[in-house]
Image (cartoon, rainbow, N blue to C red; front, top):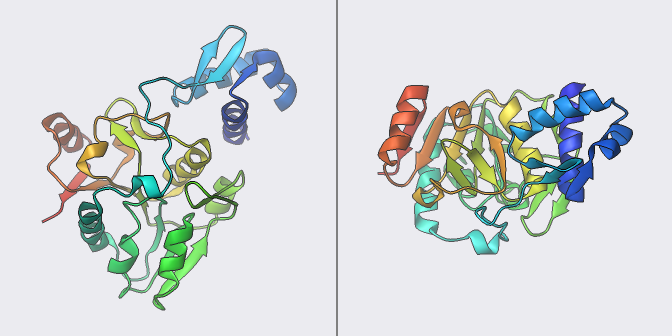
Length: 253
């Protein structure tokens, strides 16, 4: 399928840092006209750029780097309250996805009294949810990334299509109206993008420091969000954007 080929091309370029058009044609057994059309689509995702004779992974000094899980542990009180507020959206018997990241971790504690199913690629969320008997847990398949403590792999998109995910609670490294929801890990990008495409609704959990910041790759446009849960009122331009696109904004009490 074309969508699968696009994902595979993107993953190949991100892994190898650059590739010529001839290499991509040979690797994916398509014509040069086809690969040019594919590249034009991938350019809009914001993860690669054109270079002479081919493409390269997009890396600029303005992007935020990938930090380890431990390095992302700031603002714990705000993140806890964001999760408390986000838990209000979860109903009995929901099937939800909880993203990896420190902002989403405490959501498990606030939905423990509800019977629901959690899909996750996070090792820490899986372990935390295991102590609550009401919560059914499904782990996304893949290899453990020790830096992010998450499971990633090439078969995630096909796997997720077998589940009806009512809500996905997502994290990001940065978010802007132009670049959307961004992150710094190529492996995490593939997972987050697959979730954004398969969930019935998507809720962003992000403290105020994430707005106006950009990381390496865009996994979803901002207008695809159904809700934002954050710790402070949004800047005026973001609030107007959310009103225009019907995005619910929830702040902590």
